[in-house]
Length: 83
Image 1: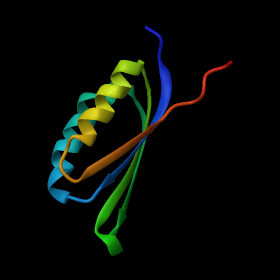
Image 2: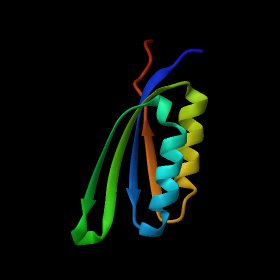
Image 3: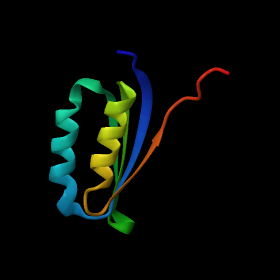
Image 4: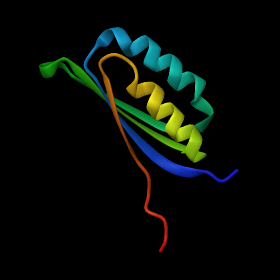
């Protein structure tokens, strides 16, 4: 199956969702190339970036499941394909 690289940007405003978020990332761990998390204590939120190499349906599923968590917002970026 064809894979692509994607970046999922995550902003967490509800610390209660962190455990569920980490469980989801563990489930999809085979596709994760790298992860970086930054706590922003001033505004009491966390900013996480996840880089994946996965089929498009896996990328969409993970992003959707993360975004469905309470207090979690996501945005997915994939490279433009050739014309």
